[in-house]
Amino acid sequence: MIVVTGAAGLVGNVLLRSLAAEGATGLRAVVRPGGRKTSLAGLNVEIIEADVRDRDALAAAFRGADVVYHTAGMVSIARGGSERLRQANVEGTRSVLAASREAGVGRLVYTSSVHAFVEAPWGTCLDETGALDPTSLRGAYARAKAEATLLVLDAAREGLDAVVVFPSGIIGPYDFRPSHTGALVLACAHRRLGAYVHGAYNFVDVRDVAQGMMAAAAKGRRGEGYILAGHEVTVRDLLRGIEAATGVPAPRLRLPIRLIRAVSFAIPAYYRITRQQPLFTSYSLDVICSNCSMSPAKAERELGFTRRPFKETLEDTVGWFVQQGMI
Image (cartoon, rainbow, N blue to C red; front, side, top):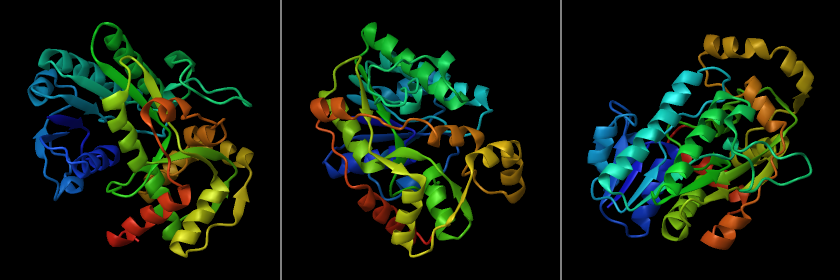
């Protein structure tokens, strides 16, 4: 039996689809109580509602599992909300680890993030030797993911068969919610983005992440971590790629980053007033202005990880949004 926490999310539902496509049976999806299950419609999976912080409920859901994929967590590009992030990402992971031990889980694959690492200096490339130091990170999300990752690695040293994957910026089809990157694609398609700022980030296809996670479960070494990075893409090239895929002209006005930083205090209020999902915050500006050079070499070497062309990812993402009537 295979269990996936956070199964209704982008990574979780695509992972279940990938497992099913590979012929896996006995799939169990753990979703939060009362959460939307639209992304799981039509999949041959057993759905169990459980709060990720509820150790007893998780232990019952994990009993008999050969592999547990822990993808549940909270993603945020805001600077605040540290306690909510800790509860979801740190305390939730602590409960998953305890439940895994209690249920005798064969292997645990934890989905961390490249944000858990201390940023590599300019001119260097981030790899798995990077530091995991929550006190040195910007943003509550990064700190929570680093802290949770350290818990998993400690558990592996104590005997739990656990491995960690570190995806970069995830994008792809089956983005029902949608994710922050998916929201950016939709904003461009609906002409809601009038300008952009200079920067870049590393994006990876969610389907490649799912394949990397499955390979980590099968071939990853206990207590090891694997960066699942994709391609470095500038903001300008991302928007031009969305334009090519949607046929909607991308914004041409590039605003100075200093100007955006000067008014960044007003950005959260703007999104609250307009009731839009945040696309840019002071934290996300820090991210796209940081060093986004990341190496998936270890995952390629040990897991056989591969990355499809980013153009294909964008075209498939837009095509899926069209099929869903979201564009």
